[in-house]
Length: 128
Image (cartoon, rainbow, N blue to C red):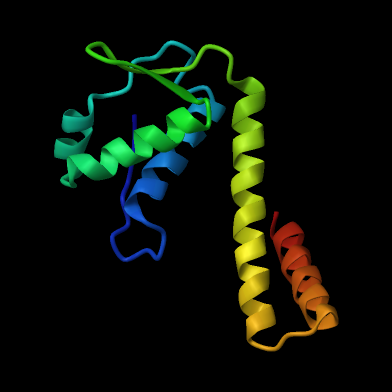
């Protein structure tokens, strides 16, 4: 498992861990049944609090991506193909909604938000 934490990011560390593990599950680097490092081991490796790793594992478990068996560890869930996509879509929707709410609070109109989204999508698709 390869997780890089960006301490200067505005994204909380536990979310960075969730994103990294979900990405590895989605791209097949972590297959169903794979054992994740223990909370302590991952915390030591990343040099962060065990509570932060525990929170990330709890989020992954609540999304159905990971199953934790007390005394044995945390494992990639067996039936997670649709859950991964659904989880990532839900997270993206939340982030888009948060961004739009900020723009509205700044006084953006519906038309200005629409124009900004259109420009961002053009940039995204033109760069790929």
